[in-house]
Amino acid sequence: MVLHHQLSLGALVAFFLYLNRFFQPIQLLVQQYNTYQQGQASVAKLRQLLDTEPPSWSPPTPSSSATSEGRSVSTTSTSATTRRCPSSKT
Image 1 (tube, rainbow, N blue to C red):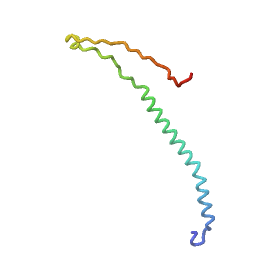
Image 2 (spheres, rainbow, N blue to C red; image 1 turned 90 degrees about the vertical axis):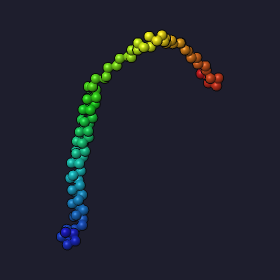
Image 3 (cartoon, rainbow, N blue to C red; image 1 turned 60 degrees about the vertical axis):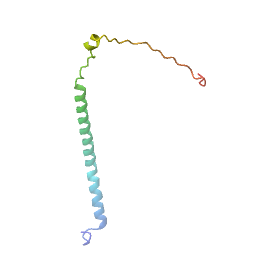
Image 4 (cartoon, helix red, strand yellow; image 1 turned 135 degrees about the vertical axis):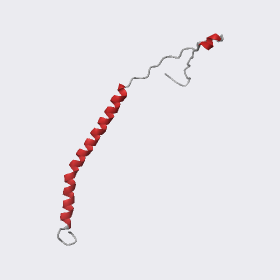
C-alpha cells in the first residue's frame, strides 16, 4: 500500500507503534502468568519433598564373628593444645 501511495510511510509506522502499545500490556500479563505458574510448580515440588519421610537409620550392630575370634577394639583419648603465635598481639 505504501508502494502504491495508498498509505503514507508515517501512517504505517504509527500503525505498528500503536499495535505494539496495544500488545505490550497483554505480553506483560502473559509473562506474569508464566511466572506465577512456575512458582506454583516450585511450591508443589517443595511440598512433595517436605512430605516425604526420611529413611530410617539404625546404627550398625557389631558382627558376632569379631567377638568370637577374640579380637578386641580399644580407643585412646587424644588431646590437642593450641599455642598463640608470637607475632599476634591480642
